[in-house]
Length: 207
Image (cartoon, rainbow, N blue to C red; front, side):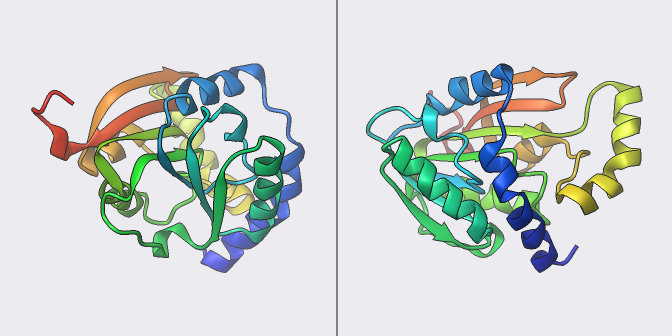
């Protein structure tokens, strides 16, 4: 899909994201993940700011999204939750920061939409400080054979409609990108993955 068409899909969904009332389970997942953020934080594909209520005090968030409509909602959410945040309107796959710029890098429910998720994870690994933390909540392919077959069959339609893939192996992508898994929690027949990771440079250091 052309990038501009993908952006238009998310622009159209901005009001829905803003008004969406997530279930208590999804909010619980966000809270247990985002509560570990610290220091200088980069949140990719911030959407309407669904993570903002769960950031601990004292963090400074750089929030990026390629949808201007989503960023407008996120800016309002930041004011509502008194979050110290700055916003960047940009395509994540074309962004760049100096190496080791952030203590924490956050991505929730966004790896499904990237054309090159492995490249994005490579960038995340580079942008995160060696002693930092990478926090991911992503959805992907189920470990259940019957369910995964349904996901593969529906994936083309779901991508055209909502702009996201449902068949990605999230943990596999994370490992391929040179990240060390610190902790993983899996839900809904492994379709939802919560991941705490670090750049692999810390291997063997006890970090």
